[in-house]
Image (tube, rainbow, N blue to C red; front, side, top):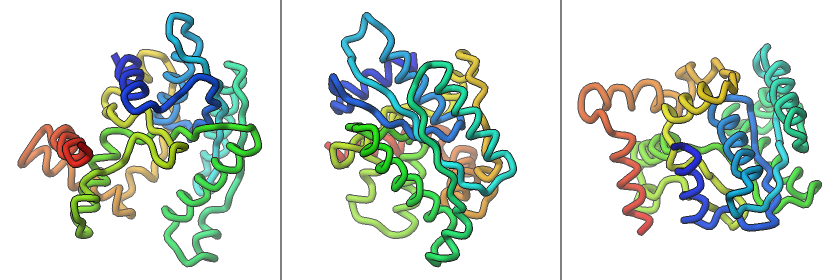
Length: 232
């Protein structure tokens, strides 16, 4: 069960402590809406020994026509559960041009800057992002392609700098899709994730499916085991 796997990850890596206030980055997509929902389930379950609060942070990148609908979707989710909600609209494309970096990098930088702003403003203690086992495998492959030592094989850590936590890091996208369907979360879908412009999208949509078809159907789990062994 997905929730049990998340609880195991939280306990194993000491991701959440009592009296924490978790700022959860939520785009409205399957991964992030799964993350905040499972954390909310854990929070309100009186049988579990977790005592923490949740605040939701959403960045509207102003790239897609649907971005305002995504923002409203996340706002409504937070309101229905009486969770604090913070949002910010950032023209990421113009920001990328000004800083002469890719739109992908500009978006990532803008998100994390906003998450840290929210962390301070609401007296939060941790920032949770919806990185998954698949994200970890993509990262390791990207590191290999670019040329890396053993440090690059470690992939995405469950916790970084004692602030950034990734409770879904051992969860696959298939499990997330199933969880969203079972819980009728009706997540939003970002069509740019299917555009093979960025390196990560090419790895996700082209390279990994090719490896799964031609070489190893379980490549995600194989890379995850490699990543874990490099962290031992």
